[in-house]
Length: 111
Length: 115
Image (cartoon, rainbow over the protein chains, first blue to last red):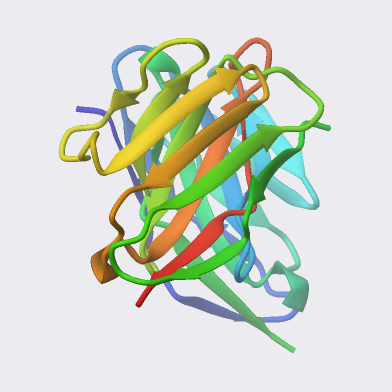
């Protein structure tokens, strides 16, 4: 069945470090791919998305490229800030408009 | 941008009572809304899909009579936790799809604590 797998956290970084969160998926067809971010005590916010192969989603310095050949959608940011501390969820939307989420990766950025 | 609100943001209730949570799309019409449950430090679990004007579609293992969903208009869906028990304590999050259903926008969540 459809699934999303992302690296387990927590990921602890220093400010200005490079962040990568791996995400791979299984799905029939060609799903749309998303990264959502959840700040403490809040709901999810859409961070970026890509709807077809080789598309690159970007927002707030974060980027992810839809790689069909590796079924991956890794999230990257070149220089993290303390305010980037949050939980990041990779997700895909296949048939039926349902989102399938990965387990979430907690990121902690220290000053 | 698309905004989804939830009310209340926090609710504490006694065991055996029912709690209603509202989910509203503020600046767009949502024919489909989704209800999720999230346990501490875990991912979101889809509970049900709420369709305007028709019965909700529940995921396997979710009790329909326990979690009543009503989607009475294109901007409002409600989740009622009936006869709540401590194990129902959780973070409940709704989402709504935009016009082409490509992106889901999430509400801020409702934290339920059943004593």
